[in-house]
Length: 191
Image (cartoon, rainbow, N blue to C red; front, side):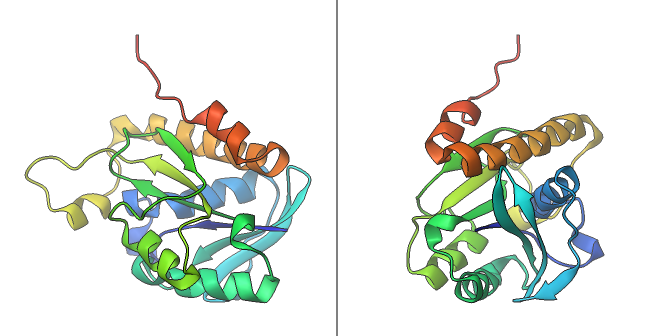
């Protein structure tokens, strides 16, 4: 069994913001795989199903981003999975809009949700899929930027990224993270 966790902030005011791209990815995974996100437990909204031939739990922590580790820890403890059996999906401002980067370990890179997960797990060795949301404009506050919605011109890239995340998760579950990294960690070149 795997647990796939998308990071974001609960409540409507954060819907469709850069920081909630992890929640959007979980919604896409649920839709693509006919999984109902209909259970509230472990400080998360969850759904059970199958992806890539594997049993999965999809989860959207409801703790707010900076406390995501609380929910992740509860999920891991309850379902008795290892840190190698989780995938965390979240936003990354160091990547171009829509670009994916899959990693099996690494620092938080300034992301407070990941920092909290690392603190609760006592390790940075877990699979993660970063979705590029672009760097903040020069005169913007970082919090204002990540809590802003995507402009219309970026929406096609985000839709495509969410489709790729769905395929990347299936690849990770079926073939492993290294195969997925080789397939999805490519920067798109616009010609």
